[in-house]
Image 1 (cartoon, rainbow, N blue to C red):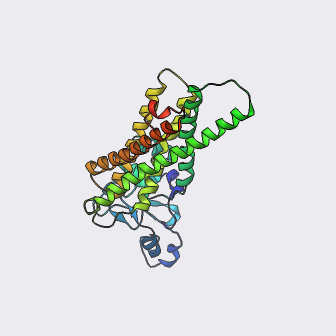
Image 2: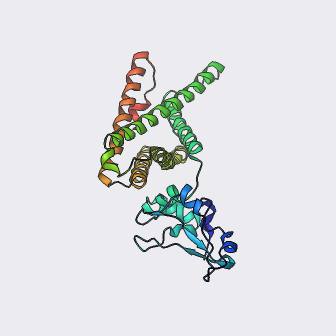
Image 3: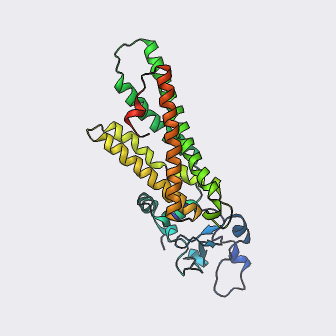
Length: 281
């Protein structure tokens, strides 16, 4: 069995140390540590039921994927898939791939990915701002002002994304009796939203390969990011599509309110920043 997809799994599964302790077991199955089920709860990627383990490690390195007791399907078939295949399935917004990434892997790049996505968005805004205000003066003061424009765009992008998340969390908090039987894990949801915003990385290629269809590409990227966020909410909280869609709309409403605020603020101070009027983000 291929094990190319096991590199990102959480520790504590298929521990071969249990072989020595389980000599009395005639089938040679390595005992799964009980601490793993207490500290790490995995999920079936098909039915979202909790599972104590993803696979069992037999003697001589023979692995067998655990079968879910609820749906009678493999708990996580992606543990033997190549990471590229998993990424393609995530791009296709498959719920199974999202459950594998969010529940059955250990990824600690949420903050770094968030910063990098914000830098991409800030660069896009800054590039559009400079494109609308071309100035060939090589004066150091002009370059200094342009640098601060980039910092300002980064701050604006950060505040708008924060407003988007606040809108989502506010809606889900109000509707929490309907979203889940137990209290929603908003920390996990935040991580899921940050990871599912990876589509913003496509903003840089869209700018580099400048074309007449660039505005259309930017809107398609926006739609893709929102679709990924929608799927992340649905998978993380195990709620229906209607509530996930309404949560996204609430986030967009809050973000639009922030954009309007910045438009009014820029108008009051007399700034020539008109980027918000030409783009949706």
